Image (tube, rainbow, N blue to C red; front, side, top):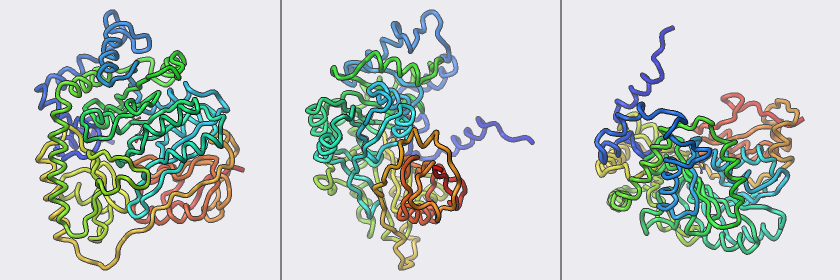
Length: 480
Ligand SMILES: Cc1ncc(COP(=O)(O)O)c(C=O)c1O
C-alpha cells in the first residue's frame, strides 16, 4: 500500500491557494510573505532545537525566552505572561487547576470550550453553570449576565473562581468589566478564556480586552486571531489574587518538557507584528469588513450578525472581525453554504451550523479575499431556487441537570444503551458539536429527551458531533 505522505497531502491542499476565513491567523503564511519576505518560512526547520547553551528553557526561563515573554507582557499590558506550546487548552488547564483544589466548586459559563470541562475532570471540580442568553433563530450563544454571576456567587459562596469565555467564538462580548467587579467584590478569581480575542487590543473599535476589563488570568490563542503557528498561545496574569508559583507548576504539568522552539519563535514574531504593524493592519481589515458588509447587505434575505444585537441579551459589544452570515431565508443552510463556498469558489470558512457560516478574519486577510467572498455570495444567491421551505430549526440549549461530577462519571462503570432508552440516565460521554467544540452534553449529566431529538435532527442535516459511538447516533454510553 503506497499512500502519499501526510506532508504531501497537506502540500497539495496548500497549493490549492484556498482563500482562508479560518484559523490560523497567518492565513496560509501570507502575512509573513507580506511583511518579512520569506525569512520565517526559510528558517523554520533551522531553528528547531532544544535546551542547549544559549537557547534558554521555557520551564525555567532566564534567558532569551524570558526576554521574549517580558516583551509579550509589556505589549499586552499584563504583569506576567507565559508562552504556551500546547495551545490555549494547556493554559486553561493550568489556570483552572492552579486556582482550585480537588473537590472545589467553580462557576462556569456554559458556552465554554471542552477544554474547560476537561479541566474539571482533571482537577476533580464541581461546576455550577451560568447560562448565556441564546439567539435561537441563529443558533448563537449571546452574553453572560453580570446579575446572574452575582446570583450564583451568592448561591455558591464556596466557589473558588469564575470562568468566562470572552469573546465567544461568534465574537460576542459581555460586560466583562462589570463581571470582574462583581467577582472581586466576592473575593473570587476571574479567569477568562480569551482564545478568540488576542487581537482585541489592536483597535478601539473592538471590545475591550479581558486584561483591561480586570480579569486575573487570561488565556489567548495567538495562533487563532494573530499570525502565530497553530498551538502557539499565551497565558497572562495580573493582580495579587493568583498563586503564581502554583500556576507555574501547572504549566510544567500540562506542557511538553520539550517545548517547540518553532512555536515559541512564532509567538514572539506574531507579537512583534502585533506591535509594529498590528494597528495599521487592523484598521485596514475593519475598513475592508465595513465595505464588504455594506455591499452584501443588499442581498435580499441575507442575515449578518451586526451591531443591532448590542445592548440586548447581555451583549455589550461585538468583535467585528468575526463575520456570521446566513442565507437561510434564501433556502440554503449553513452546511451546504460552507460546502459550496469551498467546492465552487475555493473559499474556506471557519465553521458552519444549520443557520449560517462564520468567517474568522484576521490582519492576514486582504481586500481581494472580501471581494471574492462577496462575488461568491452573489453568485450562489443568483443560482438558488426557492423551495419554499425554510430549512431551520430552533436552537436549543438544554438546562441540563447534573447527576454526578464529570470526574466521577469518567471513572464510573458504564454500559451502552439505545439512545431512545437512555432518557433520564446519567451520561457517561460527551456530545460536542464541532466546531466550535462547546459541549451539549457532559459526562455526569442527565440525558434529556429534547436534546437527543435536537442532536438527531442536526446530525441528519450535516452537523459534526464529537463523541458519537456510531454515525447515526443509535447508541449512547450511560453510567451503570
Ligand atoms: C473558546 C475556545 N477556548 C479554548 C480553545 C482551545 O484553544 P487551543 O486550540 O489553542 O488549544 C478553543 C479552540 O477552538 C476555543 O474555541
